[in-house]
Image (cartoon, rainbow, N blue to C red):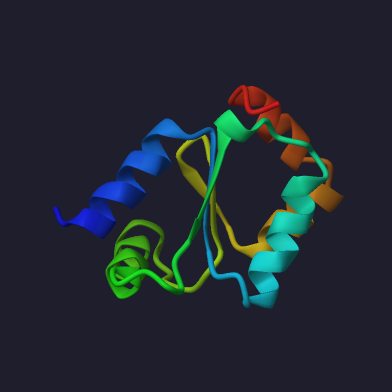
Length: 107
């Protein structure tokens, strides 16, 4: 496994909340606004901004192999991909996101 894949795989497995993101992406901003509402402690969340990384394509290709999509954001809770910005917002509005975060000890 190469460096970008290794990094993404490790973060997926070790962080309670992990997001693959790009700073200029409106869907990434949407997901981050939702997650910010919960004041997740820094040790429980990792945001991997990939737009300036030389291994950006490698990470996105890895995301496609793991989640079926290579677009960002890719939001993981407890190592499970819940989707992107729209899905994160929908889970929040349905009252399902907070219990998911609590179940993995992120809050």
